[in-house]
Image (cartoon, rainbow over all chains, first blue to last red):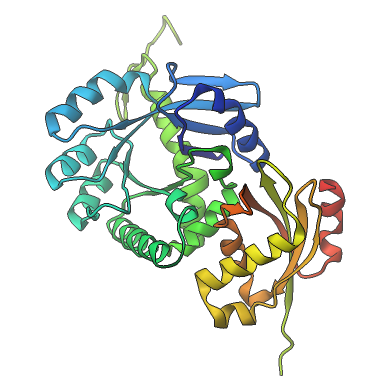
Length: 229
Length: 108
């Protein structure tokens, strides 16, 4: 089961096109930010579409309010790498699934942030879109930033997830192609395969489990006896 | 002296819009290898596009075994060929063209 958890489309109409290509290239699901109302939707192309929310607030209070509001209706919750205070607070919160970052901005992943994220199972998301839209020196700088972030995350035991970050269908790449981009970023083959095939699916599974009424907190759930054996 | 081993790669070039012709694809592949890995690596890659169906987007390319990984990566990061957005999907690799024949007929 491979899921591309980083599709960005502003228009509901595009979901069919994304779904068709996703099916052709070997994905079973995609997570889309921005346009969906339902947390999970099955589309005719045989693809499951999950709702993703990117937290956008600058301060801790703003992020806290947003998470409380959206967590139940979103399968993937991501926050962008920003100031130390807010980033460290966000990665420690178990309701946040992903820490993503814009390579064109100055913020870099710190070892301390990666360690905190590792403890709360928040993964680093690397979106490949900037690599497809750049060349030469600009791409070289993006590669450097991504490689450093990946190395910091892996050293601290933080999970790394690869996603397309696609704003149009052809911005998606097949799982095998994504593994090759992982190798380009200095990730070992087994970890690159995990970053594409296993970890995104695990995040989805974890989130789906949270939505069940029996769920209390990670590792704790209500078990019923005779009434519901 | 050890003979340079070859590898064959079956791929599918997905596209949105007008078909991409063989010449433009070859140029895009070379330019991407050159940009990502440099002149020395591009020269040693022994990259050839053996077959490409412009309509279906299915094709086979040949390269040296040592550079296969880099050739695939360079192809994967191609986003646009002659104003046509594309997505390169590596399907299967083999040491002989015969080894790909079954897959080629399946995708034709």
